[in-house]
Length: 522
Ligand code: BGC
Image (cartoon, rainbow, N blue to C red; front, side, top):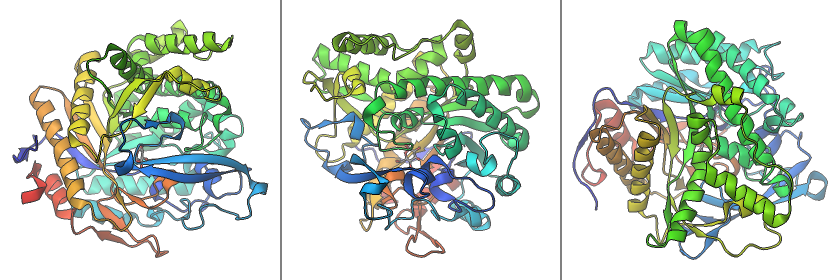
């Protein structure tokens, strides 16, 4: 049912907006920055493989509830891509992305600190969530030769935020691994854990006096997708799907765990910050709520997407249902390879309880039912999931999105025993040239109403960030998918920002007054 009350949040709830380094900074090769895996993915010429993306459907047209979404071509649900991989020598065009700059300039935020601070002030936010670029700070990957220009850039940004009473929430890693580390296997090489803790130590030492809220890694699941698919960097393709992605998940969890322990041992006492791992989340509803098999499929999907990161932080183990499902595929395929490796006792100690709050991103939810029709050519990961994921029935269905969010916060509250929760991203994309501002405001109003209701159920939500501060590079989708509160003119090389007149007042009012009238009577 559509609600029309005025929401009033407690003063203590932190409200703000988010961005990430690769999506906004640009200046991809300036002042000592080294290429990241996303530079390699798009434009630096470092990658011998190019990825050709054919948009299949978008958010509104994933409508037929019998139409399965292939996991490997599933990217955020808003845009689904079919990707084919070609060698550089097989294509005539030097770049598939000539209409986009692939992040070379992006929003040019590297050169616009003053301006962006002013925009944040105008909006009235309390929190700005942004990420640090590892290759800008440590171009070699480790802390032997830090890049002074990068340090100054973030120090200046942090100082200006604090001068204006805006709290930073820093994501230490939002997908842009130094390409030099990819050459030795990236997140699939277990030594990455040492590189990551070395990077974190440098970050805590350098910026820790100015930061109280940290998330180590943004959306580990999407990072792992890049090792078993082609929609995210390093886009290794499907050859190691169901193998490399589990290695990556393992190493990401350990990297987070060791960074958390490092902070505890060397920095917590003096810096007094809080740390988390930031998960991408969805809720999965059984396609038929009365069918036990559908319920099991929804559970398996949820545990494969979300539980696979949460359970190790709780017990040091992967969810049983996921491990069993992988074993079952192995049996079926007559495979001997252990594809998901249990943590050692020492590692379990590192992982259990390695968070001060729960951080997650939420956009939408899906339906699930068993997949009984595997084909010979389906890859291992698809077979492990044993689930068909179904999109929205008809147009975007707000009830499902809202109920999914509600179920999720209740689940975290119960399973992790009443933790602090920070909603790091929640957003609605408008496509180029299409004004969906009313739908967008309704989307945020509804989820914020869920936040309000959750607070009334005594769930400890401490913060909420709108994704995103401004339109920015939507990774493989380029600049056409627009999540921003501010718009950016990407046809103009100086990247001017502008207020989106149809939604600016709505968000400004939310941030400045902590109250929210329904968008229709705003
Ligand atoms: C990512 C963002 C991205 C957003 C919208 C999240 O997966 O953290 O970088 O822009 O979703 O697709």
